Length: 78
Image 1 (cartoon, one colour):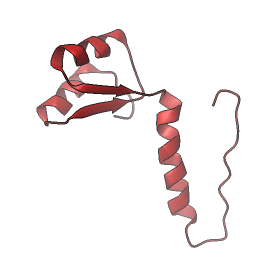
Image 2 (image 1 turned 135 degrees about the vertical axis):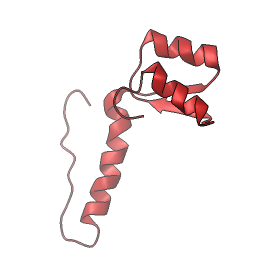
Image 3 (image 1 turned 90 degrees about the vertical axis):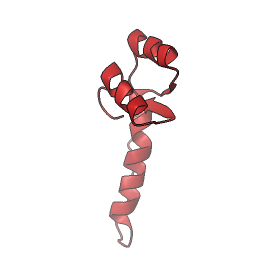
Image 4 (image 1 turned 135 degrees about the horizontal axis):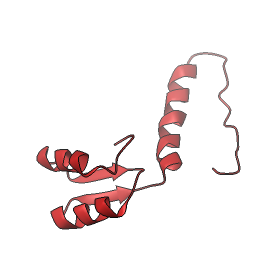
């Protein structure tokens, strides 16, 4: 879930849709407790690191078949 992935109503929606796991880059104590209470598999990554893979794949799609190069800018925090 991108954005507000730590919201328990969104987690409940995943349960209602028979999802096996809930993956998010957001976390708080309530989401952890809700996951334990309901039994849904809860996978939590850091916000930035859960988005980087999507951006890398989008860049590959956008430059496919062109002479354009995609370059990752290295920042201290990531």
